Structures are given as C-alpha cells and as structure tokens.
Image (tube, rainbow, N blue to C red):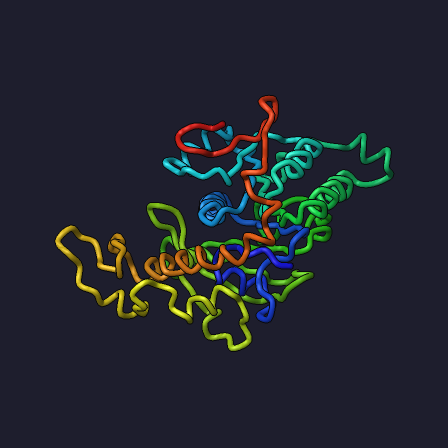
Length: 315
C-alpha cells in the first residue's frame, strides 16, 4: 500500500506512475538548506492530512512544540495533528505506536539523543541501531517516516553517509533561483519503492505552501485516484478549473465558485483549492483502510509528551 502525500504532483514524484505515493512502513530523508521551506511544507501537509481525518505526528526539536503550534498551526482545529518534544529514539518509537500516524516527521534527525551504548551492546553503529528501532515501530503502524536533515556544501545530506544508505528514499529540497519564493522537491538518485529523476515545484504563500507544477496531469500512465476524481469534476455545479477562474469577482473581492465563495487567488493556488475538494471525496475511500490511524481511537496520557492540536489549546 502507498501513503498519499495529499499532493498529486508529489505522489507522482514518489512514483511509480502506476501506483503513486510513498510506500507505507518505509523511511524517507528530506534534506534542504535552512529556510528553504521544509518546516512550512510539513505543516501544510499535516493540515491537509488532518482535513480528511488522517493522523500525522511531528517531532519538533528546533523549537518547543507549543511554540511551533502557535507559529505554524494558529487557528487550526484538528484532532489529527500531533506535535511532540520527544528527542530520544525510544520515546519517539513509543509515540508512533500510540498515535499510529499515516505520516510522521522528525525535525531534525540530528536532534535525536545518542544511543551509542545500546548500539554497542548490539554490535551496531548508532545510526544503524536507531534506524532498526524506527523500522520496528513503523512496520507495526504502517507509518511513512520522514527524517529532516540539512544539505552540506556539496549539496548532499549532511552528516554520515550511513543515514542516506539506510533510508529507503532520499529527497532533496532546494531553492528555485529562477522564480523568487519557489523551491523544488526532487528524488534524484535513491527511491527503493518508486522511481527517481522527477521534480515538483512548490511556492510560498502567506498561508503556507502550494504546489506550483502539475506534471502528473501529462503522464498517461499516472493512475492516482486523486487524478481520476478531478477528471470526473466532483464540484456541485460541475464547472471546470478554467471556467471557475474566468468567473467575475463580486463586490466583496471574492470569486464565485459554484455554491462556495473562495478568496481571489492566483491560478496555481486556485488549482490547489480544487485539489483539496477532490481530496475530501478521495478521503471517503480511504476511511476503511486508515481506520486504525484515526485520532478518535487515540488516548494520550497526561505524562506523554505528545500534544494534540485542537482549537486554541494543546491537549
């Protein structure tokens, strides 16, 4: 089974076209320079997952979880978004088993406390022992785990070569210097359960990030359910994307969109809103498979470091 990133384009990048998305129970590395957009992309993806009832979990080591929530999830009311301050591999694995997220993120992998003594007892390198523990946890829950890292001066994942070697997918996030505010997401050389060489471009907006390219639409082999739903035009008044963009703005500065009112947006942003609607329908087909991951079956003990984003409070 595959785990959707919630962006058709990113599912296509992970590939393959016939079965797009990231393989469940596997590990990706997302490497990028500071400020490129890793944290904003994670936050946007978690919000999108939460929009259709799927759990995601972020281990945030850069800033306290409460502060990150206020910065990235202000006003978000979702019982499916979980933040944690845990920084040791054992607690991280335990919390993955408790929350059972579809996607989990560790930002950053360099924050994880050293496990040298335990690794030595098992005759393994610390990074190898850490990855073994992660795999045991995500194999149980079906989670796709993302390890966030930085790039070195040579444009490669920072630190030991063991980490990219042990991961299943190595992804690179880089600024797109041709267009201000854009960055690319690519899998150039390593993807054990997909393909390599594809690139998606994302753009920063005031509210987060959105996908600025849609190359998957020109791929005749792409079999993503999301694409088929969009082709079926699932909107109430059956308008096309082009027709919706031509609609005349009303006096309030909003653009008419069937029975909805959407803020006036650039074309790529409007396309993302359309894709969000398709995701809500797609979600109905995912509920049965993802039932074990739903937040309503999760209970978090008061002593647990996992924090759930719900309303204006972390509970």
